[in-house]
Image (cartoon, helix red, strand yellow):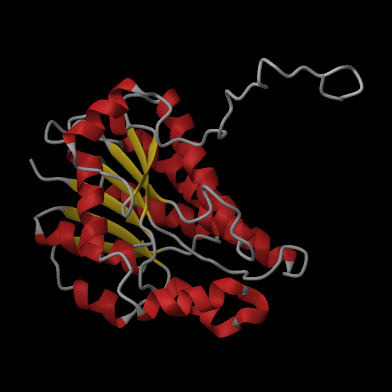
Length: 287
């Protein structure tokens, strides 16, 4: 039985690489795009790639695209969401709020609108453990990334939504994947606006893109395929880092199956208690 994948924002750099890999392995891929590009035109030669235009900031465009996808692909096995906009870059109180809100719409709310429409058409395929929904997360899970609040908030919210959806629909595999630093066009606003708006992240971006630390596309593809095909139920509802986590290792899968809190948003040191030798009076002083 062949596998059917729907890729939202298939024209983005990472999603295009994943779509190309899946097409070359015989998958039927149905994708959306907002703008064409030379890279996108190149992969249109695949007979098993079917594309439809979709502007995620236009609800009517979303409805038309979903109508096409549901007709072309009545039952999907994998649903991948890859929209990514880092703009607006700058301190929250300085950026245009309408642009800030638009970033949240594009990165978080509108993809969930699409998911809400397409989720009922999932396909129970015996070749994969469960129908799988993949999101891409971003930086900021463990620290405060300044000057990118719209993007960071949206990507972290997707991590929590992954856990919520997993609790509500255990028959579907929801996974969020953090690709790390990748050489994509999403960094262009940072490079264009410079340190005045991007702060220290401007120089960091230049160093990452010019160095050898960026995540190879193949590694991201491999992580996606692992999340889809591993028989371990422990991956469900989690957020995985392509760079830092030991995905693909049986030892990790066993640990995930035992610990329901791993790789989820949790407070750090939330079991902390004062030393037994110290007690506080009503005024807050220590005896």
